[in-house]
Image 1 (tube, rainbow, N blue to C red):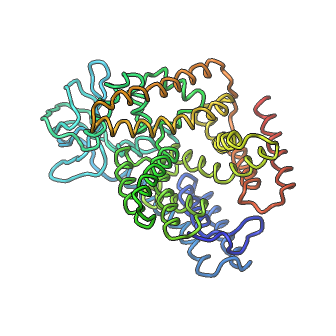
Image 2: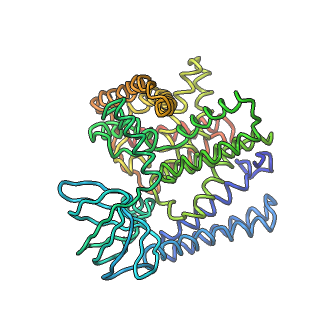
Image 3: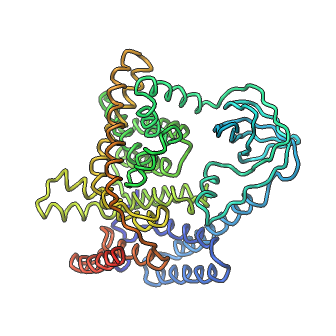
Length: 497
C-alpha cells in the first residue's frame, strides 16, 4: 500500500493510485460526451499531467502513464459499448439456453437464460423472454423466434441494471420447448437457505433476512421495501462494506482463536470472499468491499500501513478495467461515493462532535450516518427525487442493528443447517428484521423529506466543497470551516426555498 508521505500538490497529498483512478474514470466518462467536448476534456487532462510534471510532483514516466490511462479508459469504454450494442446474434433464429431466473406474472413467465447457443456458436450475454409455457430454473430450453439486442443506454438506470445483470438479448418466441435440467449451484444454495429462513422465521422476516444475506429483495413485501427506500435505509440490502466488514471481522476472530497468523488468514478469507461474491452475483458494492477488505488484511499481514484512499482507488481501477461501463451504474456510483464519504468526512465530523462533549459511541454513529448521507445527497435526489431527513437519525439505529442481525442470521443459519434444533435461535433472530421494518414504516409515515433537483454544475460544486473540507485536504482548519459553512448555508437555502 502506498504511503501518504510522497510530496504534495498544493492542498493535497499526492497519491498515485487516486490520480490514475481519476484519469481512468475521466476517460471512461468521455464516452458519454460529444466528440468535441471529449476532445476538450482530453486536452485539459494532458495539460494537467504536464503541470504535474513541470511542478516536479511527478516524473516523465508517470505523466505519460496518466495520459495513457485516460486514453485506455476511453478506448475500453468505446469498445465495450460497441461489443454490447452492435455485435452479436439478431434476426429470426433457433436458440438453446438454460433458464436461470423465472418470475411469474399472472399467467406469464418472465425468463432470463444463459449458455446461449445458436447454429453451433455460443454467444456471450443472457437472453430474456416472456412465455405462457411453465418454466423452472435450470430447465434446458429450445426457442425459436425473433432475436434482438437490448441496446445499452448510458442515460437509463434500468438499462444500466440490465447491463450489470448481463442481459444482452431478448427474443419474441414463436415456439418454446423446455426439458428439465440442473439449476445453477448458486440458485440451489440460495433456495436452500431461503427455505430454512422462511421455515424458521416466517415469510416476512425470512424474506428480509434473505435480502440482507444475498442482496435479493424479490421475496420481500412491496410495502416493506418502499418504506425502507422512503427513509433511506434500503442500503442494508446492498451487500457491501457493512456485510463484508462484519463477515471479515467474524472470520478473523475465529481464525485468531485458532491461533493462525494473519499472513495465512488472508489466503483462507480471500476464497470465502470470492465464493460469497459469486452467490450475490458479483455486484459492484460487494466487489469493492471485498477488494478493500482483502487489501486491509494483506496490509495487516505484511505489517504495512493501510491507506483507505489508495485502497478505494485500486478497487475502482480493478473493477473498471473489466467493466468500464459500470461507471454509469447507480449501484457502482453510490457504493464508491458512500465509502469515500466515510473515509473523508467521518473522522472530522466525529472529532467535531467529541469537542462538543458528545458521547463517543453516539459521535461515531452520527459521524458515520452523516458522512454517508452527505456524500450521497445529490445522487439520492437525482435517483429518488427526495432526501429523507429522518433517515439520517434512523441510520443510527438501523446500521448497528443490521450488522447484529446479519452476523446472528449467518451464525444461526449455519448452525441450523448442521443441527436443526438450533432453528429456535434462528427464529428468535427473525424479530430484529421485523423491528427494523416496522420502525422504517413508522418513520416513513412522518413524511420528513426534502425535494430538490441538482443541476450538473451544482453537483460539481457540491463535491468540490466536500473534497476541500474533507480530511485529505491540507487546507487550514479555519479555512475549511469557512468554506464548509458557506457551502452548507447555500445548500440549506436551496433545499428550503
